[in-house]
Length: 199
Length: 156
Image (cartoon, rainbow over all chains, first blue to last red; front, side, top):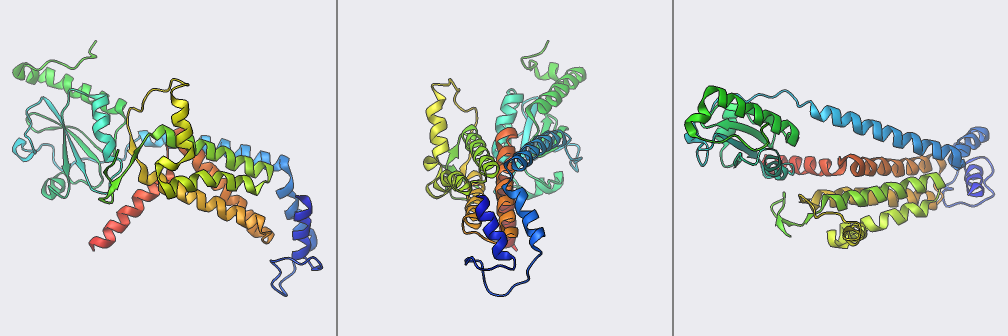
């Protein structure tokens, strides 16, 4: 291995007695010392191990950082605070409905239904392709898919997020929505029971 | 289990944990290649990726290995499946980088190019490690971005 490195160093230096496929004719000759100095680290296993370790540490650090950053969702708010129930496909019969805007080239959109099912199984999911309802998408000012809105039966937006929320985040906000619906007495009117998991 | 894929065609769905398993193995091999200064190990890492890219998820040896280990290790069935297409793309890019790096080193390219080659190996190692450790597949995101750009270009 070291012999190959020396041979490379020599072939790029002034001594071209060793024929090499990379020899294309006269080319600038770097100082032999510089070339040897560059060659040394590449062949030193300890240094390579160190670089590898540093890389793994950097990747792990970056991963944790990215995780933390992903939690802080970009501030996005729908342009409207409420949608008319008649505008929403299927209507808004349930106390809370999850309205998900999707688009054809959206990989993350496949996860949204599963996330809602994990976090809030009592909330029905209505999927709307932005191509089918551009008017709705424009009214809500959808800039990214998936965009998830949690609407109550009156059409008020209780929670909205651009991009997939984590199940924990969604669970928290759906819980808050349920609680405020209870306080407003809306649940008593519809006779709906609070979701399981309540203390 | 074919479903409508992002490009409108039919694409397979895969167990995301199998994909991460393969990415972890790739990361380990790439790092080993770098630390041991063995370019052929990089080629070894590229081979399963290339098989998976060319043949589809069923041909990916890492996915096969994961499936074999599922029952003996008591791994439960996947809770959710993900599209195979973005992972295939990411694996393809990784395979190309690894093969290019191995070729550069094995063909005794000028030293500066060998540094580039090993740099490519390290890039593959880091991205594969990221995907395996925290489920962040950068290649998959790039695939989605490219599709979006292509969609925009064809629409205009």
